[in-house]
Length: 545
Image (cartoon, rainbow, N blue to C red):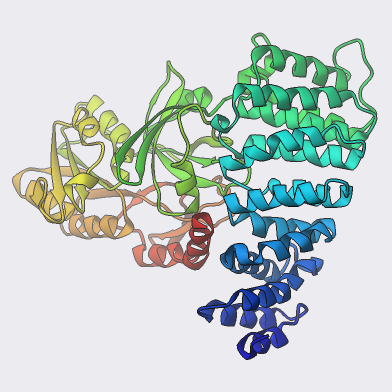
């Protein structure tokens, strides 16, 4: 063991968060590590995986995540050690080790399968190896599915239960395109046959797997009908069977019952697939989506927004609506990849489904008849958000002028769509590659000089909205901005999206998102937006591994 590594290892005390934090920091700064040094550090850092008091309640949990990332960064040199350690670990510690291995991507899958071959007679080891496969987020993990499905027939009921659990988890976390028709049929058959098994835990995971396949849209109509009838029997609602004696099994059947789409079933009334109907690229890292959400499309109004999750493990993020079709039951959104979650969303394809979408949220835009012109200003992805409001202003007989700004020509988006609902449209680019050279405020100033302006709506980056508000305040022009504050619940309960407007605290999700731009404390808003910059960088780094 080299001296520099020994100095770090001697400092690690798993009961002392500061000690672990210091060790992780020093490890991160090390350069040109040898294979032996990587293994020594991995052996030492992985000891915190066995300290179970940290799960979700202290800063030690964050340090565990950092340790997972750092160890995974050592690459395949430490994988044999990690797999051997995981094979012999308790279930909770094995989960942390499995997450670390999963961060390595394809090489990790191959190494787990090799270890499975060597330890196929050790049920305890097999359970931990199967569990590790559940943490992979890459389609290549489906290479292990045939082996997992064979494990559902194991004589050991705990192996059967874990194999079913992982089958369901992968079904929900991976893209639907990762599973071909033959594999879907095999997954369904494996789970359905065990739905009536003797062990409660196995039946529970069989029901959960079928429910997740249903939720993801992996079942055929005939398979869905079979699962529906089985779940009705489990809940004792078919008039022929008593309910399943195990609550954990009934709970799974009840949880997934709302996802059935069979015609004539009352649950269909409140079921939305959130399926991506259409996806098109607007500019680098920015996509326009049409999503199936009939209940939201029926109620949405200009200026309102939604909160969605890519999958059940994703964070919830707010997004503006750039359009909808009430007859088709679809909503239109624009997603620009700026962090981990938006990057994951932009990896979706047509046919994929969002885990859930909540909306419409917030208040509609302030629309009325005006004596002068209405100016709608969009910066970047904010251009889509102003289209519904511009259309409503135009419908009331107002003159509507649109301004769209971007750094360069290739980053201008939705200009044709905005142009169709405006009397005229002005484009600006910082480099002058299209339209007016300069900022949206330059175009706004020229319009104000030429004609009477009664109302301005600006949606986009906070500095842009601040600059617009400062300008219009000089001319006493009514101005509204849409505030993209940090949000959690989206209903005004948590207070995370609080903003200062006119010296009073308002909630962007409930009172907004549109506010009087002359009263908004933009400096405070920008400070609050930077609260989780460090965590966001870590998250995107994990995604890149």
